[in-house]
Image 1: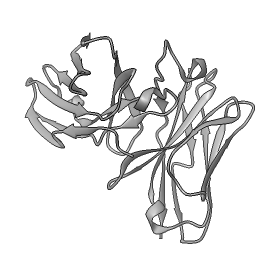
Image 2: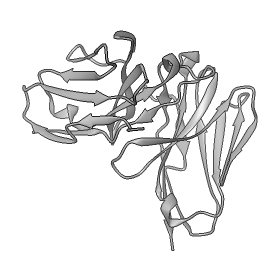
Image 3: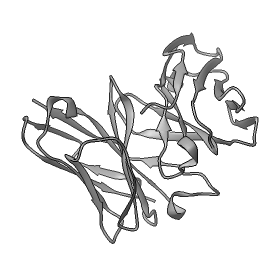
Length: 117
Length: 112
């Protein structure tokens, strides 16, 4: 079974630009979550999608958005990039609606490392 | 927001020794998970313990959970160089399963 695939793996943008990151979950997984990881703030929850619906959202500004397609693939977009948006963006998928016997066990992709100059 | 604080932030041991890392959290939970991350890569799920469990084993891993103290510990026995990684606890903050809140992580270095 293929794992969670994130593209691109590395990208460099300049302030003010926008970026779109893509995530293909494990086949059959309908829940996709996004996390931002920085040295200063650690792992921060961005949002979670299930069957094309956003079920939960973290405390990020509206510049951060996402969506999920009918095939469960997900994208996240960051507009008007700021230097502080430089981070490793991690996508994770889980099965059974995000609840395996009441727990949400995540399978992560390798991440997309964004550098904003 | 960071739910968990992990202690220590960094740990250096020799191969064959045991490594213990601790995690504290703030709100009620249904379960707690531990994940491992090799440098700059994605996280890998290691083990899950439910709020009604006190201890769980998986291979060389032993996890304990004390809900009265809102804390958990992860013990890795007979450490190997390949165990070098960062370890994170994650909780379903307030019972919200769709959102996991991760701790600050412990960076483990296992030397030969």
